[in-house]
Amino acid sequence: MNETTITAKPDTPFIEVVREFDAPRERVFSAWTDPQLLPQWLGPREVTMKLLTYDARTGGSYRYIHADERGEYGFRGVFHNVVPHELIIQTFEYDGAPDQVSLDITSFEDLGGGRTRMHGRTVFSTVENRDAMLAGGMEHGLRDSMARLDEVLAR
Amino acid sequence: MTVDEAEERLDRAFTALGDPVRRALVARLSRGEATVNELAAPFAITKQAVSRHIQVLEAAGLITRSRDAQRRPCHLNAAALEELTSWIDTYRLESERRYRRLDALLETMDSKEQET
Image (cartoon, rainbow over all chains, first blue to last red; front, side):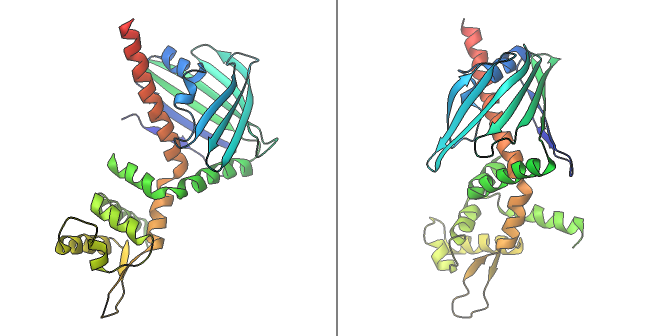
């Protein structure tokens, strides 16, 4: 199993993620940048992802909408820097929290043998915004915590 | 309570929930208290078997039983369950699910490449 390491140190505005994948770096990068592939994995399972714009090149932008039975949630940002197969630096903003822009720095490390390690760092504008993001995940999760419990235990 | 005691309790709770019947019992009790007979009704197993599952859940601190001699209904120990769900850290879980979908996608990309 490929474990996900998530670090969110108290009193810092960062969330760091490290995850390995059983696929070469080029393929992982494609899954991240190809508008055909991205909606197949990004976003909570129970929402539909509508990708309106996704131009993963330096200076490009993106916009997508998550829709579920309770409504629609829009997200947008720009690609500050995209180095094919290596690095993506992009901004992220949720329509529901205007101007609380965060920065996502994602790099892909070739481990050889067809494996890749992804390093992700999200930088929020304040510690409070970071904590709100984490708490939002909690809230969302508690709605179907029993189902989640099943999944965890089924591993 | 020491860290070790807390960990031990968490272990017991997870072990207790590692069974589909016991998870179904917990799910049922999350909607309100119920007697053993009421809990056993939807299952194709004996009332005795359900009773044993209830004992395991009780020992794990996930449910409690009233001392009402007539009915002795079971209740969910909401605090114990809350401890579990917050421990699971839903943010981490959401991320993990996302990356697992990506794992699956990467696998299909692999087979497509082999076809061509």
